[in-house]
Amino acid sequence: MKNVISKSGNTKTALFEAACLLFARGGTPSLADIATKAGVGRATLHRHFSTREHFLGEMAIWALKSLEQAGANASLKAKSFDHAFWLIIEALIPLGDRYHFLLRESQTLSQPKIKKSIAKNDAEMRKLIAHLQELGVFNAEFSPGWINAVVDGLIYSAWEQIQAGDLAPNGAGGLVRRTLLGGFGLNQQ
Amino acid sequence: MKNVISKSGNTKTALFEAACLLFARGGTPSLADIATKAGVGRATLHRHFSTREHFLGEMAIWALKSLEQAGANASLKAKSFDHAFWLIIEALIPLGDRYHFLLRESQTLSQPKIKKSIAKNDAEMRKLIAHLQELGVFNAEFSPGWINAVVDGLIYSAWEQIQAGDLAPNGAGGLVRRTLLGGFGLNQQ
DNA sequence: CTTAAATGAGACATAAGTGTCTCATGAAAA
DNA sequence: TTTTCATGAGACACTTATGTCTCATTTAAG
Image 1: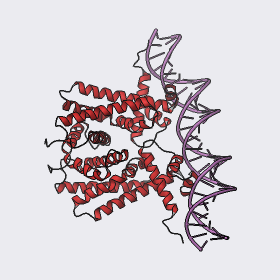
Image 2: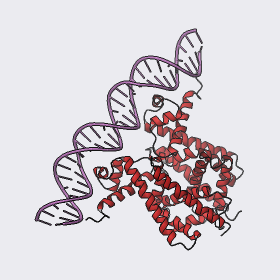
Image 3: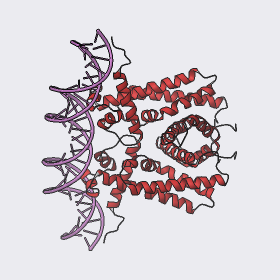
Image 4: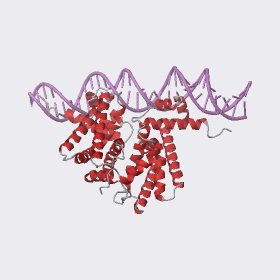
């Protein structure tokens, strides 16, 4: 019996990762573009996914699971809610392109299950933020929804700058943290 | 002789605004979708624009000019560089969808002139940010490039929340300002 | 009121992307 | 080494979007 971590699994992952990069550039890449970027034949893509919609649906599930896994792994190492939050951010930055795909592009899919999962994770994030506000980590003056939206944007911006070579990967988590906590002002409050 | 601010001008503007909204939803809308959203016939769109590429090019120019105009108008009222910056932000938030289109979607166009103009405006923004760092408004610890990227993200996030009804338009400018200057921490620096 | 301009609708042709299929090749498992 | 599985290439059919055109209608200007 064949090892389930097969080349098939590698092929799918290569396709999903290629698609993420192409979507991050803007526009809507064709299946042919995605296959080429992944280094596989278009026929191979069609062997694994019957339609474009099917491919994007599976991709969204893959992105969701890997992001949830990254978040869960980060939370396991946490010593506090505060710590957990920053570890999650750090874990999500390298996955900024698939995070962006999940929040932006996959919304056009008619996949209530995925939308539900995204909404659930979003609600959990806002809950954590609200809790951190109670703990005095975040200013309660701001709505958790707004802080959450800003966090999403920072994760993607950091990923983009790393991609462009303008930001060192190892320093990204700290940069996002300092940006979120202190802003860019000089103690003018 | 007909008034140049004609229905033709109104038709084009309706198409550009409709396209902005559709692009903001994610995905790549068809010309038929855009025409329908704008409330005009597809043949009419094709009378004004010979190809899809032509339409998107003209749209990018329109977006660029209106954003530049909004920025220039804001700068005229400014009493200082600091003041100018915040007035520009406030002016750009309601145009968040076309700002987003310009930065994201139009990058896929093969239009060096537009890319050049976008790069020029971007450089000017970073220059203003660097100047504000010298003035002590912004913390020089952060790169102007990073601050600029965060500003772009905040403008779009604010626009999205207004669109969704989660943020009052009149309070958006102040929210972005407080976010940028103070972050979400509680004076933990 | 008349004329001109703009537009809508829809048919048709073209182009691009998608989906299916077959044959051949390469890689991996038995 | 043989067999099985995965894949590549490319042809072909289908679908969708785009681009063109004509006729009719509406709107605006004279």
